[in-house]
Image 1 (cartoon, chains in turn green, red):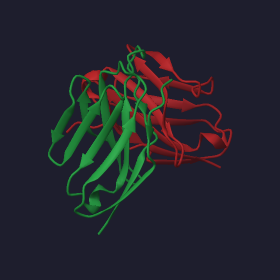
Image 2 (cartoon, chains in turn blue, purple):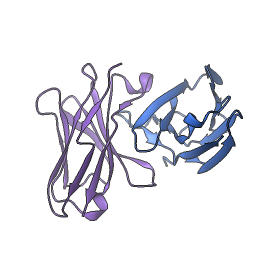
Image 3 (tube, rainbow over the protein chains, first blue to last red):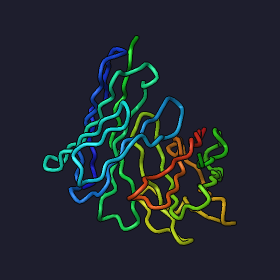
Image 4 (spheres, chains in turn yellow, cyan):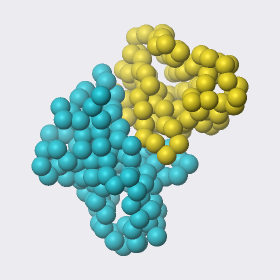
Length: 113
Length: 114
C-alpha cells in the first residue's frame, strides 16, 4: 500500500524543540520530503532527504531517517509561533512510473508563546 | 524565486455546473500534477501529466475530470458537472525532476460547490 502515517497533533511552547514523526511504506523510495502548509496557504517544500542518508541538517531543521524501520522525523529547533502549521511528510514510491508524490496524513503543530 | 500560479483563489459554483481551474506552472518544468485536499483531510493525488498526456490518474479522477495544457504555459483542470463532494482545495504542482527536487505547489484554488 501507499499509506504514510503521522501523528495528528503536536503542541509545544515557543523556544522548545518540536519533533514530528512519520512512518512510510515503500522502502524503495529514493527521496522523502517534508512540506509545510500554513493556514489557507499552499504546500511549501521545507526539506528533503535522500534515502542513502541518515540525517540532514538545514538551519533549524534536522531530518532523521531510519530506513530499517521506515521512520522519518523532522526536528525543529527553537520553535517559533510562526512555525505553527500543518507538516506533511511525503514520498515518491519507486513503483510510480511518473513520480507521484504520496502524502502523509499531516501533523498540526501548535506553538504557544 | 519561480512559482506556480493558480487562479482563481476561490471559486463558488452551483452543483451540476462546469468549472475550470487554471494553473501556470514554472516555465522549464516538464511534469505537472493536480492534487486536492478536502477540508481537514489528506492531500490526495488526482492526476499527473507529462509529454502532453496524462501519465497517471487516481480513482478520484473519473470521467467528470479532464486536464489540458492548451498553449504550452497554462495547465487546466476541468470538472464537467460538479458535485457537493468536489468541494475542496485543489493544488497544482510542477516539477523539473520530481525525485531530485520534489514539486513546487501553487497556493491552491478553494472550490465550493453549493
